[in-house]
Length: 424
Image (cartoon, rainbow, N blue to C red):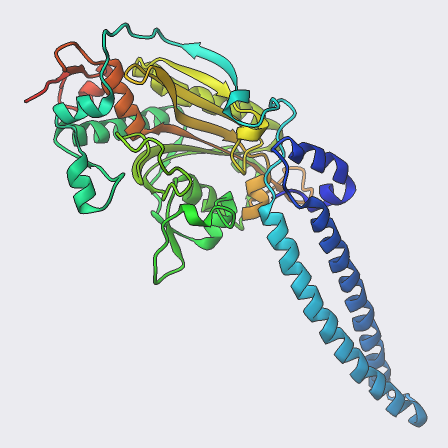
């Protein structure tokens, strides 16, 4: 959520920044609603002040007889006017909240202009692209290796649900444990949160109300299956005031994630890339405002370190203003190389939200100097998407005979397993 005072005081700056996101956001209508709300608030305060004055006069017992009826009539009229204004005030408060929740974050000045992924900027390339003659795609390899069972996943649920079999299930679990252990050693405190969250949690991180149709919701409860563990972990400290010395806080968490992918019809229908249920290890940071830019770079490097440990070639992309997520002020995408598809595919988004989520979730801290509370900054990134990591391992480590070598760092989690072999 943007700072309302900033919108009031520098509307042109806000409009110019949001126009970089391809526009379409009702900032001026928000200002109009805010002005009407403040007008009603002023009237309510005037009526209330006069009502208190009349009450005070009656309490003194010194009201002249000829004034009593006049004051009683005025008090009744004031009550009716105050009730009318209270109704209008409530209506415009709800309108203002609705508009504020619908406006995305402003891009950081360092974010390049652009309308879509074509405007993203390559920042870094790591690793050597493997030379594989006639590389197969991960779903071909995974089926032959009995890693994936796509047909039974459809039978059990519907399309874009997959059963992991035998070594596939073991590889997924090994990757989860490896990532959690890796990040824990780098200072992240592990959390295992609920995978059902309430509406306030979804609203706090920016998933609601804008993207309501993208998520799975329980029919009999106001609860949502988490689309990412960013949601429960970021909301751990919602409506709390931490002390400055408590910051920074780094958390890592594993959860299964659930997304309808309502806007992705026809995209990645084959394979294990875009699933309705998928596993992911997340990184979440809470820090002082002055430190968030530096922490963003460090968080991104922590996600990259997983790819480097697995010897997976990747690149870092700085997203342009038109391609960033709703809540981010700056975002790096990490894209891993897929030989079978002959291109890079996203495997992690690492975002700095500034105080945008903190305002929505009321995440504050008390400065050490005793000054008034401030909103902290939040950051998060995938560290990593486990399914996409597994798919990338299959494609990058494939051999001519259809076998796949297992990254050495995973061997301790797999009982020393070094190779996945077909028909075994």
